[in-house]
Image 1 (cartoon, rainbow, N blue to C red):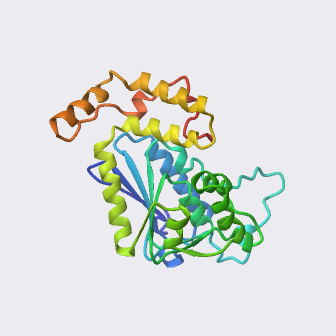
Image 2: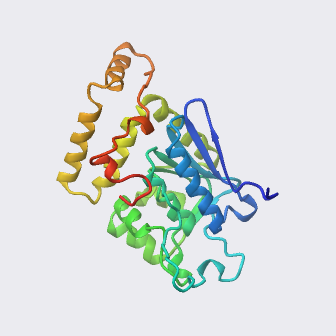
Image 3: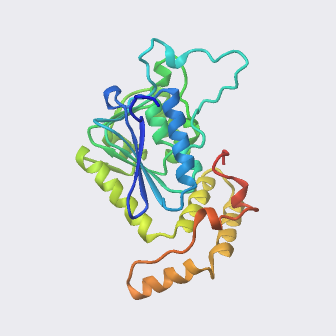
Amino acid sequence: MSDEPETITVSTDADGVALVTLNRPERLNALRGRDIGALSQTYARLDADDDVRVVVLTGAGRAFCSGADLSRAGGAFQAPRQGAQYRSSPARPMAFQIRKPVVAAINGHAIGLGMTLALHCDIRFIADEAKWGVVQVRRGVVPDAVSHWTLVRSVGLAAAAEVLLSGALFRGPDALRLGVATRCLPFPQVLPQALDFARDMAVGAAPLSLAMSKQILWTAADGTLADVDRLESEAHQLLMGRPDALEGGAAAFEKRPPRWHGRVTRDWPEEGGFAAAPPDRMP
């Protein structure tokens, strides 16, 4: 057993919200390869846990994530071993590949890899005071973790070019201006509001509906009209008339919290459109 503290911690509340914390505050949550591997394993475990409905990702201390750990000179950007298969994103699965919504509570600085991992999340809240940027072109490499894909699909080519090609550092309000984040808040409010938002989703939305809607959303930005129509039609056929569809209407009519019955791991279709892109594969 190692005496090193856990660098990725997880706690789950009674509403089914899992709080995942990057936990190297003394290094501003800079990530090593082992930490990214632990984060990936955490995502895979949460995807398979039906007691978890929504995930919130944040950082311990005053930073979200300062990027790759550069404590060894050039260590993060060493040439790959000859013959080794190299992927720009060491995280597998990535946040957008799991069937639970992932909310990034960017409580402080998010630099380089720290920001590109935040771009994997479905929704982003950011602190007013946070510095953020995808700075890799200023480190002699290029933006990683499929950020040329996630950022363009989130904010469009022009705004993505401003972020990726400048390699500049921005402030929290710039994230709102560019569409990188949906809420910009004072530091003390970022995590509480992200958790409140996540709990409202976890309680009010059916888990299986959330999972299917998330997959359609990530397909929609670069899919065709026919792709989205097919997935929406398939989802309706899978969900309509099922207990959750009946419960959702009854709960709304009776003005009470819904009691959901569907479980993602049990009820996810094994064949067909939704199963064609499981969480361990790129969409």
